[in-house]
Length: 261
Image 1 (tube, rainbow, N blue to C red):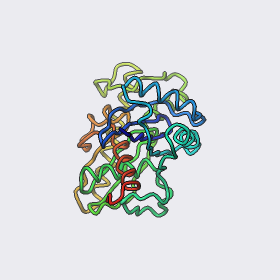
Image 2: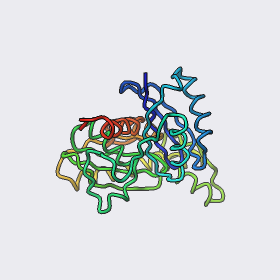
Image 3: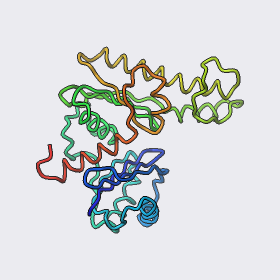
C-alpha cells in the first residue's frame, strides 16, 4: 500500500504528514534546518515512521511547500534517493485550481496558497485564513474561489523575542494565557500584552477585511499557536492545525491524478 508524504517547510518549523488512501495517518512537527541533508531526513523520517507503525518503504510520493528555498534541495535529494523520484514542489506553474489575483502571483508564499486552497475546499465560499506562524498572515478568498490577497504581520513569537532582546529588564517568557489583562507581575504582563494584544489585532484586521468585501467570509485559523489565540478572538470561527497538510494533499492530486478538479 503506497503513501503520500506532504512536507510544509516554514521559517521556524517543518510539518510533515503521511496520507494513505486520502486519510492523514500520521503527522509531526520538527525544527526547520535549511542545511539538513537527504541522509539526515532519511534517518529522521524513518524514526518517526517507525514510531507510528508506518512502513518506511510505503512512501512513494511527495509534495513540498516551502518558504525557505535552501531547504528544498535536501528534501528533493531525500525523495529521489529514498522514495523513487522527486516530489512535487508548490510554486509557479503548479495547478492550484485557484486564480491568484495578487499583482505579482510569484510573490505569494507557497504556504498561503496551500492554506487558501484547503480552506476554500472545506468552506466552499468566501473565507479568511489566519495562519499563526513565524509571521501571522491573513489570506482572503472570494466566493468564486479566487485568491484576493491579504495582510502580513510579525508573528507572536517574533514579538516576544523582540521584547526580550531589545528591552534590558524584560525576560524571555512562555507564550501562555495569563488569565487577566491587568496583570500583577512582569511575566504575566508580557503574556497579557502578547496574547490579548494579538487577539485584538486579529479581530481588527478580520473586521476590516469583512468591511472591504461584499460577501460573508468565514474565518478559519491554522498554525502552531492558533489554539492559544483563537479562543480569545471574536472573529475566528474554526481552528484547523492541519489545514496546510490537507491543502498539500489536494494540490498533489490536482497535479498528479488525472481528472481531479
